[in-house]
Amino acid sequence: MRILSVDLGTSNTVAVLSAHGMPPRVVEVDGSATMPSAVFAEEGGTLVVGRDAERRARLDPTRFEPNPKRRVDEQTLLLGTDVVPVNEALAAVLRRVFDETTRQLGGEQPDEIRLTHPAQWGPVRRNVLLSAARLAGARCPLHLVPEPVGAAAHFASFPGRTLAPGQALAVYDLGAGTFDVAVVGATQTGFTVLAEDGLPDLGGLDVDQALMVHVGREVSHRDPQRWQRLLRPESTADRRARRALQEDVKAAKEALSRHPQTEVPMPEPFADVLVTRGELEALVRPSLLRSVELLSRMIAVAGLTPDRLAGIFLVGGSSRLPLVGSLIAEKLGVVPSSLDQPETAVALGAHQVSADGISMRTQNVPGPIASSGTVPATPYPPQMASTPAT
Ligand SMILES: Nc1ncnc2c1ncn2[C@@H]1O[C@H](COP(=O)(O)OP(=O)(O)OP(=O)(O)O)[C@@H](O)[C@H]1O
Ligand SMILES: [Mg+2]
Image 1 (cartoon, rainbow, N blue to C red):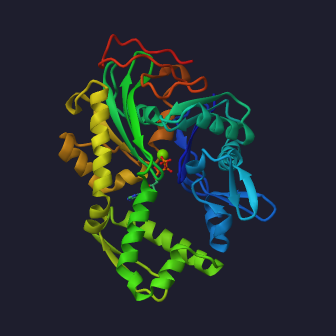
Image 2: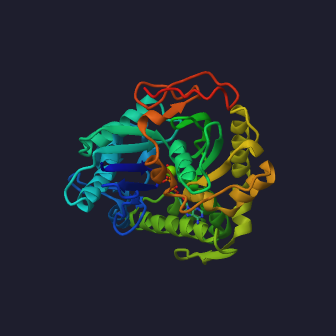
Image 3: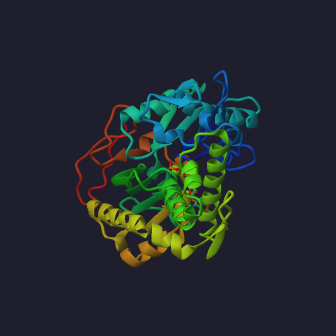
């Protein structure tokens, strides 16, 4: 049995394969565990994805979409002069993953593909994902796994972390596009989502944007017109300069999780800017406080208190921000866990859950497609009956 799990994220896609009884492993694309979910439309409409798309974006940023998942509600994307259906853009990303998997399987196809999705996605968005997988050439059965269920299953797969039926885990997922929080309970047969919510305006991209504004405040007085041209570029040269600056700001943000300060290289005529972790934390603290309040509320909605959880599990690349862990510990009195690479937890965990082992107890994610049913919210653990998947 060959099972492929794919977490198509806002900025990164991660695929995990288990084949011929071997333990699941991350499928590296272009030598990396995470592939940028980016798409670039060549003249003539051919779609290039991943690192190749990012490289091509430097030549013509107008033909580039770094975060197609963020635009799942739009029918089409305008890339340069080409109109690209959004499911085709997502299909191009998935096709790259499927092709690499088939190559690594010596030409064989997977027998089952599991696609993860935000717990808050309704049937329309889930259908876009499914149609993208079919467009990308998937011919085997497809199963949908809510991202927090994948994360919880990954947590529970670690020795000493097994969740007994009746135990529950909070998943705090701060990725690139959104913040998603869920409380996931273990049942006799799998997992049930007891409570979930999210903040659509909080993710790594929003942190990048806040840091960009901060940098602008530091330097724009030197040449306000040039700064405006960087923010709203009209020429190819300005678009390239803005793209390079966005990359440098993102890299500086990530470096600040490891170092107390770093420099952002700036285009002429601006001087390079020194940024400190303290400055970044001041910028993001209000948003992160909102996320921790939502986490606290979801634990209460699930009928639990932080001390009764098996843990609070941090996933998503932006959960590497040290302030995330310290705010959770300060406000909830629980030191959260982050087990390994927070970007790969969801895809790795999707391997541990079968389609009929997932249920949803929250009200806002019913639908005919996802592996979900709906039962009324009651304090957890109740009589431990799991809702069968549909
Ligand atoms: N060391 C770090 N410090 C802060 N942020 C980081 C760090 N490393 C990665 N990130 C951020 O994590 C984000 C990517 O995380 P991830 O791959 O989990 O997101 P995603 O799955 O693509 O997004 P989503 O789950 O919202 O769809 C990027 O915004 C990236 O800048
Ligand atoms: Mg993600």
